[in-house]
Image 1: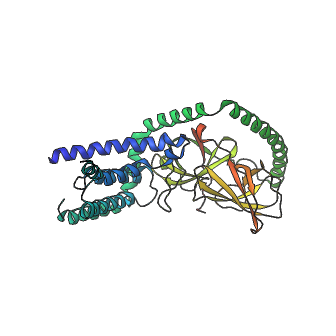
Image 2: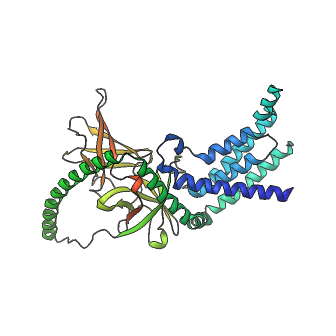
Image 3: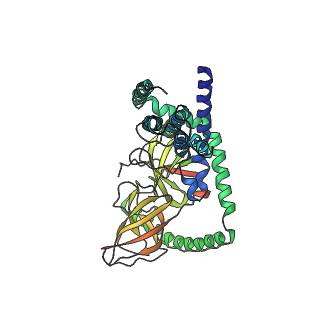
Length: 113
Length: 269
């Protein structure tokens, strides 16, 4: 189980690495507003909100999004994005676990049934 | 998820924060440089592809027309400058200054551009270039394109790479002068390739298309560097100054190589 989690964690890191590279080296040329959005941040936030609150993928995403923003974007205080994104993700997940309990998908399937 | 998870998670974040805080005293820059070096090939390839893609999508006829008009204007400016150059040389000789202390330039390749801006932490409209402290780059060096077109200045230096804050960055404010006008003003970056001219005296004439150059008053850049040309002008009766858009002289789509002026070290400002 732990081995699977570590592989999953590293795989998420790899995806976010390539996402960041594309974000800073390719997307600046595409002139639409949508391409100027920081995708890694938005994806991490969406995963945190949309996945089941017991799962850890959102926190992994927040960690890698923050770390690669510190590396490729941040100018001062190395680690500031990582630590703040991690804290936000943890707080968000705890709030969702405590007050919502259901992910939007579970909520939708419950309504449909 | 048990409630004990909260304590464990916060403890983990605390430990990570301590580790990262320690990295700020040295290894942080080397980690960044390591990732930049490893990603350089891929980033350079993506940068070339992105520029080509964007260039092909634009309206060629419109672009050609604009370039032709700009070329004609530049040629006329060049003629004026030629006269000034001769006059300048005569004066320098007379004053015994000589032309030996010309700018020493280093060429660098652009590999990435950041749009995300966060005051004091991340510069929006900043570029990553493949020359760093090993090549003699220092914080504050001016970065230009050929023909003295100002691009920005170096704000972070790593061993093999540097970060350049463009003049369109929200953190950039430059003292400028306008062609054929005695008035001084400020060029303020607005992010996303936009620059505005502010604090231009209302009593003075401002014409669209006039050249905007750095003034000798500012300490951040050498004077006489081209910032751009005046675009739409707005003048509100209740305000004491005129404002205008500045069309940057550079084009991101064909921005592959830049030059760093090496022999001037400037302070922040």
